[in-house]
Every structure is written in C-alpha cells, then in structure tokens.
Length: 82
Image 1 (cartoon, rainbow, N blue to C red):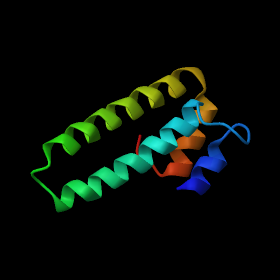
Image 2 (spheres, rainbow, N blue to C red):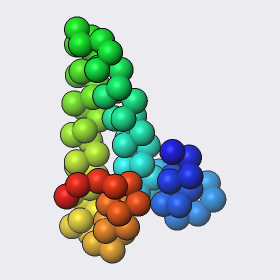
Image 3 (cartoon, one colour):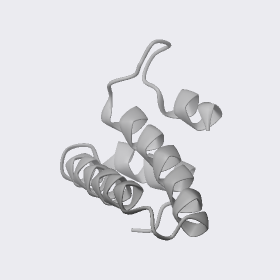
Image 4 (cartoon, rainbow, N blue to C red):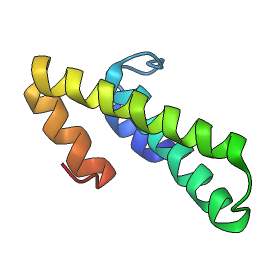
C-alpha cells in the first residue's frame, strides 16, 4: 500500500492531502474487513470500519466536487467503484 500512497502524494512528505488520506483509509478498510471476516462478533471493529468508510466517502465527495481530475486518478489507482 505504501507504493499507492507515494503515487498519490503531491510531494515527498505529503501526509495530509485528501488523496493520501483516501489511500490510507482504503488500506485501513481492507485490513478491518479481513479482521471482521475472521471475528464476526467484534462489534468495536465493525464500528471503526463504518467510520472509516464514511470518512473516505466524504473525502471522495470533496475531491469529486473540487478536484475532478484528482478524483478520477484516485479512483483508478486504488481500484475503487464509483
């Protein structure tokens, strides 16, 4: 996942741009999804997964509204459906 973050970063030390945040959240969502498949009764992780999904959705909506070309790049590089 680090490679995808580096591809989306605007500069070398970029950690706060929307594109990088979406990449980090995508990694977190994938990890939590695998965890929940193993441990179905872990409700705290389920809540964390929902929060991460909603935050990523908000960031993607922001990108779609303000930086459409960056939005398309993020969607294609992270293989997200939209």
